[in-house]
Image (cartoon, rainbow, N blue to C red; front, side, top):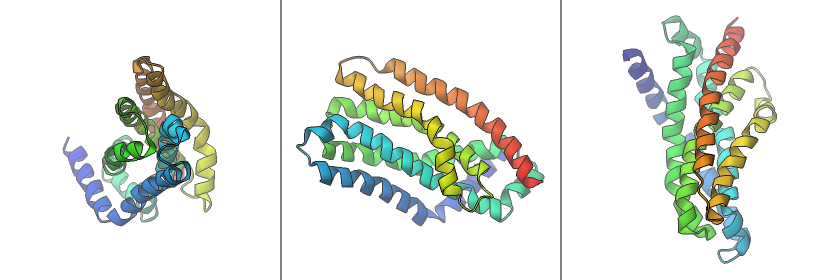
Length: 221
């Protein structure tokens, strides 16, 4: 428990020093969505009917673009290797980074999303479902993106490789995340989709931890 708390404190302190980068990521999410709001207009039926899909898609790309900053500096300055040497496991390092990413990236997204949804003309009854679906789906998105970053750490073109590598795995999460709001539109319960998103996370977590452990071992050689 002491190791977990000390590592968690370290990650928060490091990322609080880089709040400018995090702010830019949140700004990208806001602007990316706001562009669609301007393009479609508030009273346009397109924004009201497909606003939730827009929110989910911009959220997806925001995660892809920003997850790298949580790993790249620690890799190039040798911090990840040093943490392993002094007794921190790869599993613990990734879990702590996942928690910090969710707190510093997803939490602000969840806070500003209701404002964006209202500007898109999305019905109030659908906003709660959208927030829950993002909250449940985002941990899996973060895990998949984290694994993609680890696998491409040594590549100079890692952004392009990252998108190519992980995007197919995002499709089921996107389908069930967006689909949960579609069910509400049809006056059906989205609970099954929520359970599926939780199930995807429970499958993604051990696979990511195992694959990341082997990947970092190979990189450290």
